[in-house]
Image (cartoon, rainbow, N blue to C red; front, top):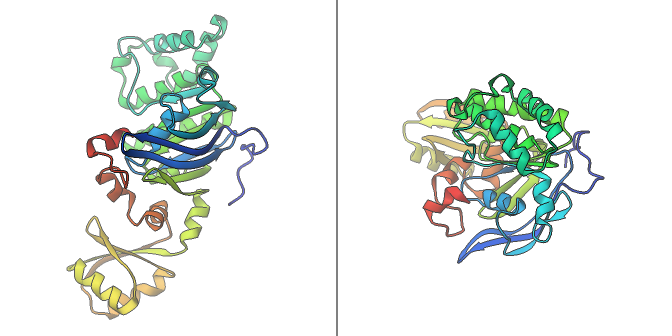
Length: 335
């Protein structure tokens, strides 16, 4: 594993400690015996397609679901026997908005502070602090129904911080947002990491977002199949990704396999395969006489890591039902 940044405290009690965690829904195994340690101060990413078990795991860690087996501790409290202590020490931003759109931004935060017992004298200064952090202080008295999707997401992050949690859980925090807004959300999360004594645990199926994390766990079919820093995971793949567009992709795959013994596949109409030195390899393709219309070579990405561990790209996995669990397609987006 690569060296971790200084803001991560590996000597302190883990922010999240999971051992042998399982969750069954009848005959469906959504989480299949995972072990996980998230350090204090870490920005930790859960990467995987819809239906991989990410949201189910988050729900267990936040005491919204009971596990079927195993143990889990958050902020050094047991999620089953110390539920209230866990809830006092976490913030949670759901995939779907849970704001009251008929209230103002300030009223939403005041209500949250009341629920969590924030002393009245601290509510106003804390509200200003978190709203300024996400760029919404000047809109504090505006009704939430007038906010854009990105503004609502930023407000939900601010609300999750009102009671100064030890661990902030964000379940697909940028889903449905445009790229510019997604980028701004991560800018605020960087600022949060630098200004608050907090651990951030985020689930995502966006590869570029996982790259922002200190470490990531790749989850597939209810299991963690890889866990390390983004750089270390990419280094494990070790090969370049070559993408070509041809007039006959099936013929190209057959020819590449017969001549070089390379397994290629088609993703979004493009033939993709991995080789040790892509730039040196590409000229050999043209020598075969294939009608190649476009070619590109890229260093290993997290999508390559996902493909190496699961046999498919995360885009392909997202389009199918929950992977390997037998979960019905209509449930896949909710687990």
